[in-house]
Picture 1 (cartoon, rainbow, N blue to C red):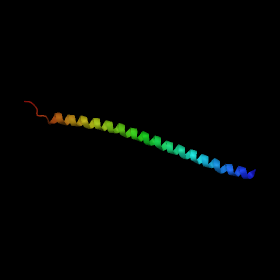
Picture 2: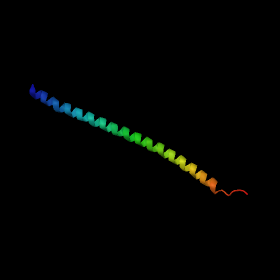
Picture 3: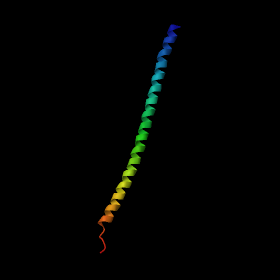
Picture 4: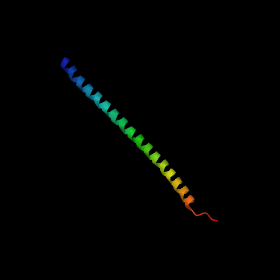
Length: 66
């Protein structure tokens, strides 16, 4: 019986390690998705600000009627 119980322990460890790896991989994927979403949001804000500055510059550069 001892031999049978010895065989179960490595399998349990492998299963535990696999589960941990799966959790870590999942956590990394979620982190990447979150970072990507933040980057897209920041890019959108920066593009809007750039457009506003460009419009202000264009207004400033227009000749003033006298």
